[in-house]
Image 1 (cartoon, rainbow, N blue to C red):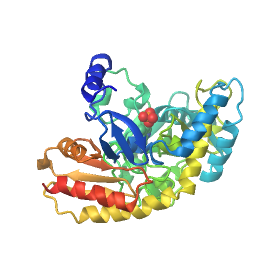
Image 2: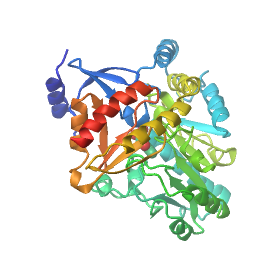
Image 3: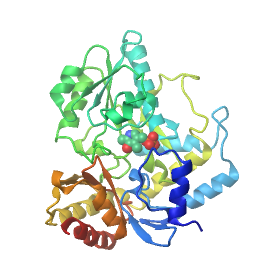
Image 4: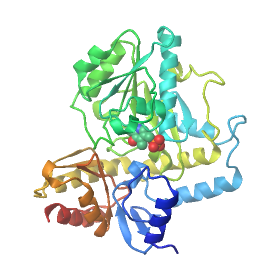
Amino acid sequence: MATTQECIALENQFGAHNYKPLDVVLTKGSGIWVEDVEGKKYMDFLAAYSAVNQGHCHPRLVKVIQEQAARLALTSRAFRNDQLPFLAKELCELTGYEMMLPMNSGAEAVETAIKAVRKWGYTVKGVEANKAEIIVCDGNFHGRTTTIISFSSEDQYKEGFGPLTPGFSMIPYGNIDALKKAINKNTVGFLVEPIQGESGVVVPPKGFLKEAAKICKLNNVLLVADEIQSGLGRTGTLFAFEHENIRPDMVIIGKALSGGMYPVSAVISSKEVLGVFNPGDHGSTYGGNPIACAVAREALKIIIDEKLIERSAELGKYLLNKLRNINSPYVDFYRGKGLWIGIVLKKEAGGGRRFCEALQKKGVLAKETHENVIRIAPPLVITKNEIDSALEKIEDVLTR
Ligand SMILES: *Cc1c(COP(=O)(O)O)cnc(C)c1O
């Protein structure tokens, strides 16, 4: 078997350097545990940015993907398959929406949402051709396509990649007055993460989403929730927007929709909105393929059968309380919902990277985001004992 150093050297030589991963080379996973090529075991406290909410290599997902791969893998949407209709029905029944459109990556689903909202703006709301505007938030993360990075507030995401796509305006996250001011007759949508993940698990001020939903309704603007990272149990509810009792017009999901087994994403919405697509308007060769749909159906059932939403709510509260009892000279404060916690470090702590490297040595894998936040997001199948064991290591690293 290849060694850590061999793998790193090969990747550095032949792979583009668009990431700066921790120097750990993983080869196996099960539940919350992963193992590197040297045989060392770690608790995964990132869960592939919440794609692996159901735990690594969930036996039910392994079984379904093996069976479906052996039966039928890809038809393209030129023909129908016998998995997509049932994923569509089950997803709509679970979420209470009327229609879904399947894609592969999260970014593709965001692109799909943008196209749907724009076309709805022209054909239903009556916005003048090519004038549609979508409002987004400062600190957003919605993916990496050219259009999506066009409305990022991260300079690095954009620099060198222009010309950028027009039609977006930005407000400070959580600022309701700014939202009111930004809306004009051409505004067709407000695209928002109910909790910002990549920004460092940023929870907006209480009431912001509720107010935003009201203002959108009043102005005939579609509220689009990007729940790719926050959704499907991560925050202790099926969707993070439920914490404010709202119902967005459109929801974008991905990541945990397949439990980390396969790229599957989707947008879910009403007939009024997704009905704007006519044959030929949009598509994807792999979108809605039988493997993706069979895996997603099982991944959703696992969330319900294993009560992962309830676990996240309960264990998240427990973990956050325990963390808050750690007396660390480096931590400014903690924030989050469910098993999704940002440890916000003080400026003088010197960034999150060295804490993550120290955690790695102790057998816990986590990743800093935006320099000074350590994101804690283990698979939702984690047990209380495993949390206690990880807490000891986190406390060690934060108090040393
Ligand atoms: C990860 C993520 C995306 C992009 O998903 P990809 O599958 O990486 O394209 C979009 N929005 C949010 C909120 C995300 O966390």
